[in-house]
Image (cartoon, rainbow, N blue to C red; front, side, top):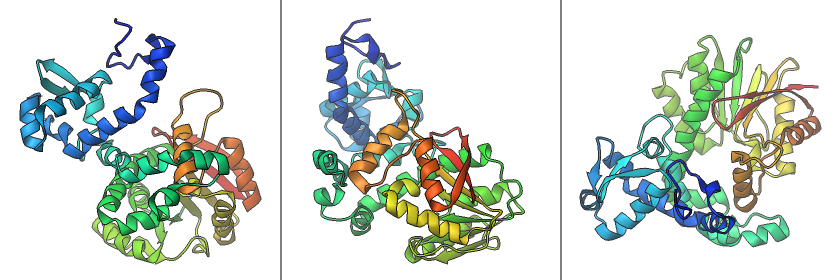
Length: 347
């Protein structure tokens, strides 16, 4: 293999250190090319088989020579493959850019191409110097307020969270034993992707979806469409103030990592006030592994540092946070996704 190319298998390590660092430094170019392909729906256009660059350009109303240059780059990292001169096909990696397939990443990749992210990363040095998130500094609004005020971008963000949620929810119900739980509260449960998956898997269980009032209204429709309205109560409220009391288990998916230590502790202490003494607290989070391995949690932690002011945590850090909130970390259950279930019990 030439020392100046990368195979679809991604053999970056075969390059000289100089070129390895070059490709790493230009990761934003690959990310941008990916988001362009996702935005244009290239993978959907290739779902039924290879198509020529000219056909793809016509279907996407783009400049054919320029589109070719983008797709050629993505072939180099294994997303597409050239099957003949200026003709492209999907790879297994590219399949994940299709709309609506299991494990679809299209919405997520569209989200990473939003200007708000690029503007935030451009201000990242301020985060490193001060420990403060820079999303508001870059965009003029707090994170969730920004997407509420920009509905088109908000729709992309919500789509990414929904697709991600479906993958993680399926992994959670497959990996974790919900036996012995008669009632569960999904704290900050969005539109109910997780609690719907749990209740369908556990037909004897009852649930409560707890969310901010305006989000809870959207969840009501989704839970009804899932046929679970008779088993899942929708409750509006603010988990910084209180959490519905009296259930066997409380589950929080990708909630604690959004917040700094003090606010995360507030949420967990409110759960401690609400939970039964025999109950279980379940945190669905990414657990950062020790050592130098490339790990999704380390990448997400950079997003938290610059964007929301939260953080990803190690097992030891979760154990200490839970201890401060009045819980004991009981065990960590890995899933098929990059997230785990952190099980804690009241003390």
